[in-house]
Image 1 (cartoon, rainbow, N blue to C red):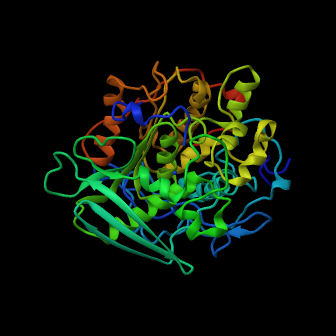
Image 2 (cartoon, rainbow, N blue to C red; image 1 turned 90 degrees about the vertical axis):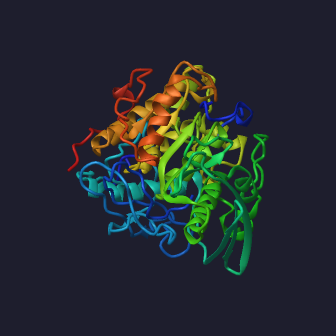
Length: 462
């Protein structure tokens, strides 16, 4: 039986970098996400368009996967640069439905039920479910990720990482500025992909904002246009992929290059990405679709990352001025072409929603920073999504790996003590390896309406 959905600014972010609209990774195994020497098995997600190992609509299947470790999550390990497809160790065949096979589900789809109707009963099962969610997100929301290219050449010198990426007889070149960590000491340091953000002390900066723009050009929220940029030059068959996924693919290539080079003094097992608004969307997608990002983080991302599509449509129907699926699709090139079909009431046909997309971060830590005065981002929708995501993390035995500061602040204006209490705690624990607690760093700013949104029971997973 098929699933019923198928059939039947942070203080560190300069205000000048914030925009009034919201927005950038490939699936690679490996990376490190935990603190204090705990262990986790890395999980990666997604494949590209038609190449081998990918999954397309119309009943085709994908096999690959990953196993999840027992107990709580922590640091994952692996080569990462190989860019393996999702779910290493998962032998389950996954069929991606066609658009015609999707049925309406007014609730946020059950994260613990596979498309074929079977239930997730263990953390090992979740590895395959995670793969399934990633494939669905690429098929219907963001567009497909082509994964690693045929070859990458990289050199590092004087704070600059130069990369040549080649595939199918085409090549592109990227140049990335890297700023050493302040007070970093002698050994390799953590680093963040900065998209208009500043790194905390002891964390290096990978200046990715302008690099992403060369890969997939933004329209400045002036409407959806034909995609352009180096990503589409290299992969002309992926023009249906949105810029968020193109930017994420590019960040994965930067990680590949960092792993191939020396002299930058970056610990490639301690990476994160950070940005606000449109840049927050990009930072979050970078983290969700490359397992080598140890800490997944975003500030004021709203729609496209942290705001559930169904709750947003419900709030708009009730008279709220919030960003919805149809609006975000027309505003920019962020989403994949296939997402156009889910505007307005058709959003109920999406086989997943953003609580499941955010759960792709597990077994790594995740922190989403929003404000209750950020009306366009739909604070109630974000809370609903994050609360459901918290239930997923709790079932997986990692409740303290999820942070959600949601104070009385506006868009990208989240300065204050909570920034130190929440974000710094996550950086200190998961990037710096300090003995810091991240328990109870979740703001219950609203009440989760489980009767309206929760689809199915939350299991206890072995």
